[in-house]
Image 1 (cartoon, helix red, strand yellow):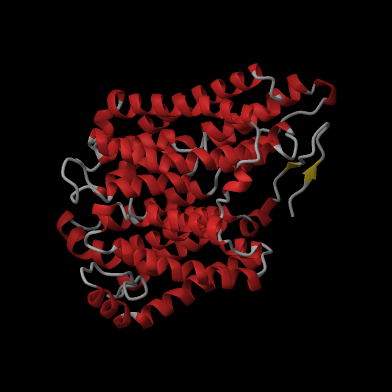
Image 2: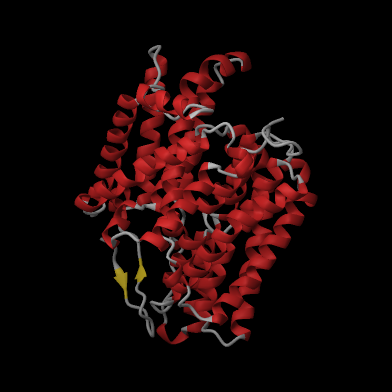
Length: 465
């Protein structure tokens, strides 16, 4: 397991690398192995004149309940096979990481069954008229169950929010051309850098002005500046925060992440924003990858369905991915290293410790590498085809099934977010951390909107051109 180094005046140990064991002990790596395995198997079937479309089953568009029931019963065997596939591949990895399958399998079975229902409702031809998009529906249903019904705590073993979203992100790479990443990458990284630095500094100094511990301020700042949960944990370890600091920051992240899932698409709909602009805005303004995907996908699905929303459905998810995953998430390792230097050289000079440059690598979100590799693989495959052949052959037989499995992974994630959001627990944090973090929210939302809709609007509105 990870080597832990006690930190002076801290209840939180600094977690160091676990070496090569990281390859099978960390969710990031398992998300890569799982997703790349799916992609390579899908290509193997395709290269042999077949497809994995049979196992990548999903509810078809329906108008009447009779149509829905006929569609479901006609594909029941495929749903059972898909359930067994997901259960098997997740079980192998979670067992290797030390989780109890006796808890995971029943909990995941519940998640999968509910996800089918969520997918079905989202497939209703009138769903968009009532904002019954699968991401938002999954989130709301999960929160209702968690807060009004309640589930046993052991079932949290199956609500693997981070694992599901990382798997979905890597699979997303297979549907996102490398040329698009290369073209928009500089813009995404530049915009993300502006937002990340501004947000971190505002939260940190406002928190200090309120008298909060500087280690808590740094942890809150990271939660708002980069990938909320992962960033908070990484910085808490880097600065030797107290054991309650990371949970406080994570609570703030969850509260505002959930609020932004509804607020950003609503405002975008009022302003008739291009789907690419909304995706970029969400990428700079959301605090968690899973919540951001929910907001971007929900709005993107309205394109072509609701009058006045320009852009293509995939533009919202593409822009969000480039902005958040490519742009902001890489700052996790950078902030961890910078704050480790500041902590050990300025805050704790008496210890004489030195930050390790390898900190950037150990804190770097590895699933981002999987995202790029998946994009490279699919770009290499698709480069052998004309655009016409891509649309008629590659997309329906290879890319389409992978995209469907990606959607399943995201629904697992969105539903799990709701199931693990317990408002009674979130209400226990103090007012000062909330107000300090909220200043960062104001910076994120305002700055993100200006950069996405004005400064770099041309890039985000021409992603798929």
